[in-house]
Amino acid sequence: MWKLKTRAFMLKAPHQSEAYRQILEERDIFEIERGMYLEVVPEMEQMYHKVGVEVKFGAEAYEIPASDYYVLLEDLRPRGFRNADRLRGLDQTHTESVLRKFAQWHAASAVRVNTKGPYDDKYTMGFFKNKHFADVFLNRSVQTLKQYVHNYEGHETYINDLKKVSKKVYEIMDILNDPKPDEFNALNHGDGWSNNIMFQYNDENELLNTYFVDLQVPKWGTVAQDLYYFLISSTSLDVKVSKFDYFIWFYHSELVKHLTLLNYSNPLPTLRSIHDALNKYSGWAFICSASILGFVLLDPSDDASLDNVMAEDASFKKSIFTNPRYRKHMEVLLPWLKHRGALE
Image (cartoon, rainbow, N blue to C red):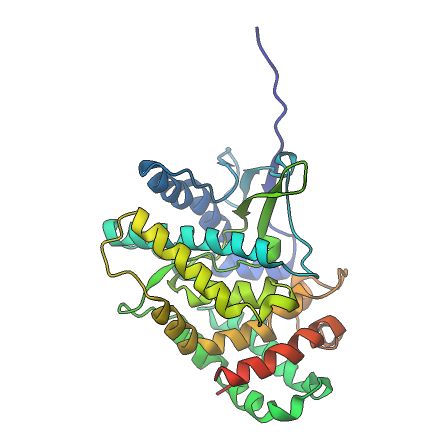
């Protein structure tokens, strides 16, 4: 007897906007994301399956006869997946779950490249190698921060440092965009903030699993990119700084565990080497604080559109940097960044 099953899907297609058109002219992010879901991620999951461990990174993807600009995925919500509250940020339990998933992802990609060679270029370039996008999304945010930082409590202690580092945005990005072969490198998610992470819960609201979504801008390079981007943008303020070194220790422990599981043949990265990378690329931590964090903490608004970001809408920018929630985070982060040498 035939049985009918109801399945839910999610179809991603381009926004009908000038800003999105500009992005697609530069990079076919839909082709990249389809390839990530259909080729790269299944390969990494199969690596774990071969050693007797089941690891799942995200939703199932499907191909259909359609234009190039689509990604068809299973809808995860019927399975109990949902986003966390980005305005509150992630607590320690959720942060650990995400860092474990990053460690599994980074380990698998490093072993894959170590054994089979580099990924196709389209999966390794990231988003900000394009100077225009680096200017729109990063540099302009840093310059706008300078206009409003005098309203932040304690700004006198770091404002001169901020002015200096704000002139180095492109230099910082050039260094980040040039992977060093003598460092531990992996495939970064590239956009791993709270809205691009989904959590599965049981009926008692206990956390069961963590999946990544939005795989449009992967980048090969130092894992410091994913670590700073996620920990700066998506953790709750009470753990963001106070638990940072613990979170790095936790991530490193999981990374070494999964590299060993997958028979990584190169020397295992030490905790010191991960900290060395975080120190070397600490300017990226400042850029994440001045850019992605502000968008994450902004109250829902019709003004929060890609067009307004790329058009440099002055009132929209002001709403980001005068947001009391963002200011509260930055009053903690900026002194911490100064003391770590990230504003030099």
